[in-house]
Image 1 (cartoon, rainbow over the protein chains, first blue to last red):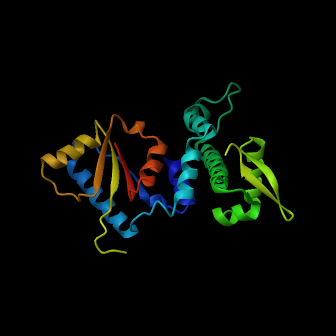
Image 2 (tube, rainbow over the protein chains, first blue to last red):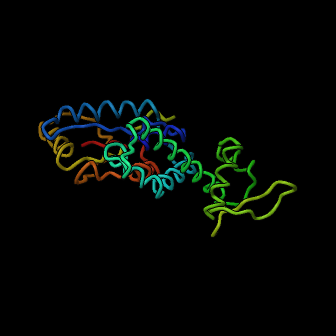
Image 3 (cartoon, rainbow over the protein chains, first blue to last red):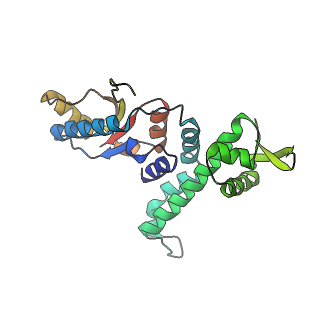
Length: 167
Length: 67
């Protein structure tokens, strides 16, 4: 859930839209209080318009479903407590950092792909559409090319144009 | 923004904890806002990150996970 919050913050949706609360079966009053509190918070935030966030949401969906993140999330205990066969472990904070970095990369990759879904584009087009820095887009495109998810499809003047493979 | 904005929150409640808590709140007639739509799940550990994204994609204003 920490990863989801991190990605929601990153995508501009805001982590406040997700709320995690512990209530036991005997705490009806506490549950009611939480609902009250959270409803007021959402009321302050205003309505959420999924159409405005279609691109980030699609990217989050893809990133959170990616094998890389799934593996990392599933191996939390192994990485932080048991260690690998050489006894190497990461502490909690290093693991969080690793997970967040991986999540950001996967998210950016998914965002670039989502932007290419409608039509091919140059690095600058993609940067404009996704709001990512040009250099980041370029790095992610490189990774996408390596995994054969995006490819070069021609040139517009001197700028290379990329497209989504398999569309 | 309209004045009548009524938040719509999707709530994933654990069958054994929060769902029973919500039930108790109902039985003991504690008032709480009619903003949540409850999805009962068998354990809050079952909530996948993708559920949250899907909830937001379907137009909910907020997601509450409680267990």
